[in-house]
Length: 263
Image (cartoon, rainbow, N blue to C red; front, side):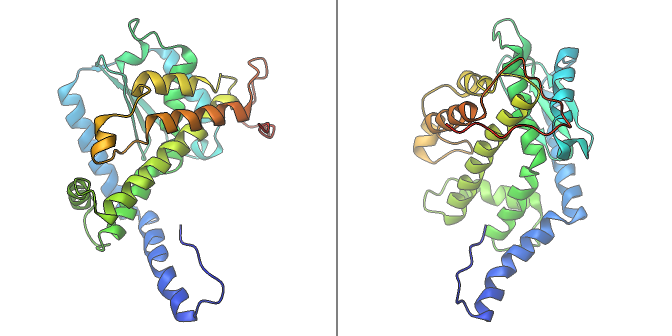
């Protein structure tokens, strides 16, 4: 987000505001939203060509419905659907237009995730949809590349190459934004868990199960779309402690909720 300094000239203010206006126009452009949706759906089709589609247990649909009901933004639309495919690895995705995708490992006996941990995964993905994070990232990349008219697909390809350049300012900015989005989705997911009476600490435990507790080689070499694991777990743990938890106090999705407790 741009910061403006007092005393700047009118011309400087206009120059600083121009990129913000372009970014806002991109975010609010229905044609850009459609472009992103087509790309997301194409990726989903490719994914489903590689893995058998499976029916997620009804319990997961109920968990997701309760989390959606706890968010005014999600209740306002678009409709959100749950899709699952067969895979032994814990993973999850979200599409801005209203789709949460889970692997079957989420409910496998081998992984043995608790209901609260599965809810934490879903809550995290719903937080990405709330924030329209894919569209925010796409529009920001168009600006970073200096070509607002570029197709989103072409911008993704160019940014993928930039990510291999450790000196690229565009890649550094893109990674920082992606990391911020992941942290924000963890924190927002924790709040959604609290609202529906689930343990916010489940976000910490499931992140550790999915990502481990040590930095990966990719993090060390050229950075990653996900934040440093230790830092991420520490921030999630702090957020979970801040909201407090009492399983007996199941909040109504539409009722005002108490202010989070100070640490």
